[in-house]
Length: 505
Image 1 (tube, one colour):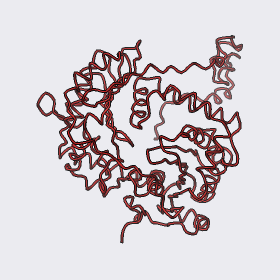
Image 2 (image 1 turned 90 degrees about the vertical axis):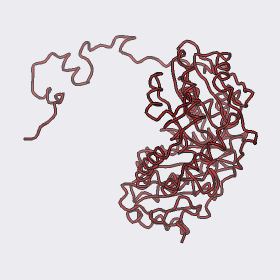
Image 3 (image 1 turned 30 degrees about the vertical axis):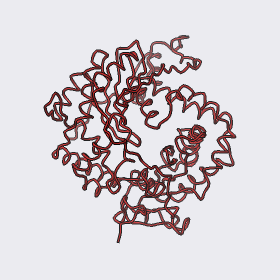
Image 4 (image 1 turned 90 degrees about the horizontal axis):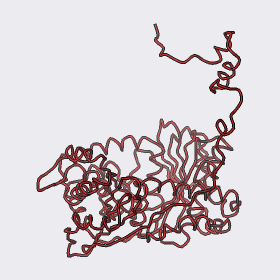
């Protein structure tokens, strides 16, 4: 006998049963609305009218440098007794030593796994319990440009929270057993990643577009397996120093209190006599082949990814580029999704993201589709990127995409943690904090002609690179016919550490 879980009766069956129910109840069942009244009450049952836009409330930002070189950023937001504290190191995967991708990510993973506190070692479980006792999680993250440790606590607990963060950053234990455990977890995650067409296409696209420069580095299983404690210890010794660190405090704290707190808990940290390490961040060095086809037999769908050039983070037209990317793929009603999903039904969604670094940038457009549609989707993505140079957005289209950018920025500022993350990103990129006050106005000032000019300058067909990952036999011959000089690889042949993507030999 099959057991069925208890379910609500289907409304249509109730109505079809011919039960003698009051007319008002029948109307409610048919519409799914409460059967209290057949007539809407003005001001109660009607949806609210749109309200005028609210001005963006960015708090006054205060930046101070301690004598040891550590940067202190305070964004006071009184009214709610919460403070988000972030210690940010200006070094991410781009600072990995040559031939050792994955060091920065692994170091950030191990930071909360043990630290010396009060002169004695404290293990991972105790670190977690101490953070929990303060009412927070201790979040550790490594990303391009910065590695961060962060907590959000009540104002009264800001000092013990910063003391915990400081010990974890400055005095991590970096134990062999924790490295072995973290390495195994990373390898398990990579097994899943390398079986996913979407994930593989993202990694391969990065290598295909950036090439053998710091922002093109990817850490596949072989690189993770090679990581040793000595690698992490050397990175810690070279990069974790006060003149490479910022403390960002956002929430219920004054600039004076924030600076005093930083001085008490971090002022004794001495910078090494040697100068801070520097990075030579190069522009992209794209693969000569414009298309890479990676065969992943048995994949459920094919992932199509296309990269186009973007500008460096210090470029004068960076914000124009952000708007151009929003027109292209920054939301449900953006051009890529309109074309691929809404008009043709070839995918559940198509979008693009833009990244900008000191040496240059990349726009990455991506979607997944049924295998036989891969060639068509690839042509659509490439064509829509280059079409923006000849078909600028209308005023209405541009206003909608600008609204998504402004709304997304405003939502990030609604929480202390989101505000802190915005400030960290600004500091890590080397952009003045004062620029944030003009961000919305500059986004709204972009014109259709500027978007078109940006696309004409940067998004030419010859500059595009593409990666298609999926069951190539099921995709048919159209992909190869479309680009005869495509690089075709079986997944077993792919080596993401190689600029050419192919395993040596």
